[in-house]
Image (cartoon, rainbow, N blue to C red; front, side, top):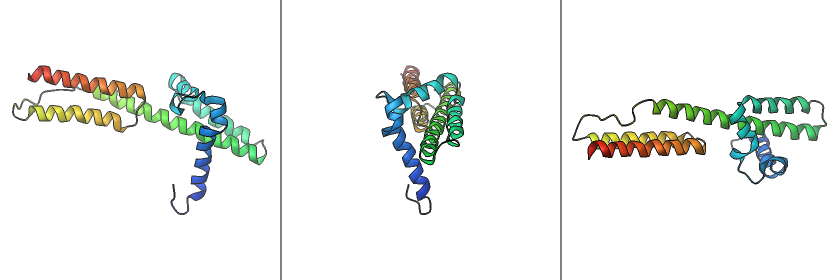
Length: 160
């Protein structure tokens, strides 16, 4: 975050991160848990990301009635809630992609005996890479690993 002309933005984003990781956010909400396992994200996963958007709205609204230092603190908190919404959106997208991929036969044999092993193994590796490259939640990673392992077992059963 060192692009010329964007230093003020980087400063604000860093302060929001610091508030969540080391300040008020850690003191009140972390309970020693990583950010992605804290109540705000678990709540959004259970009740929808609108919960995070509402919290950001509420903090923005409250900031209008506060002195500058407290208004800034509320707005930094709103940024953290919005970042949480981004995380949940990306998790939902990764889960949807994984589900769509699971609906397609994972190890359809190519029918070419000479090249089949390469094609099928590459397909299974592609699925694993795709699932892991979308930065999914731990549950999704577990599902991707199970899908990959199942595809490899199916390949071995079909080709041995």
